[in-house]
Image (cartoon, rainbow, N blue to C red):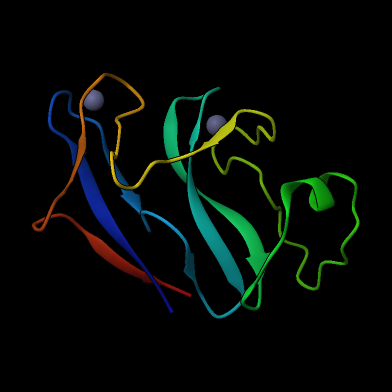
Length: 112
Ligand SMILES: [Zn+2]
Ligand SMILES: [Zn+2]
């Protein structure tokens, strides 16, 4: 089961619900990226059933998907080419030069 927590920028008012790194649910495996096209922190599907796919294998369709998930694609703008891994130790805000802080009073959801 996966968990998403609220993170809040310490400079601007950007907040996001994210797994903040690799996490897995019953089917999907997700990892956290910054999408450079829409400037958001997004949890992107990178695999299924505990297995993580390589971006290249997805691009060249070298693996068979079992669940018709959309891998390595931004869930907001569907970009597949602007995803950069979110550095979970530095937690940069995609909107300004602030840092995303864990918000203990923020929303928490269990997905899948
Ligand atoms: Zn910010
Ligand atoms: Zn995007």
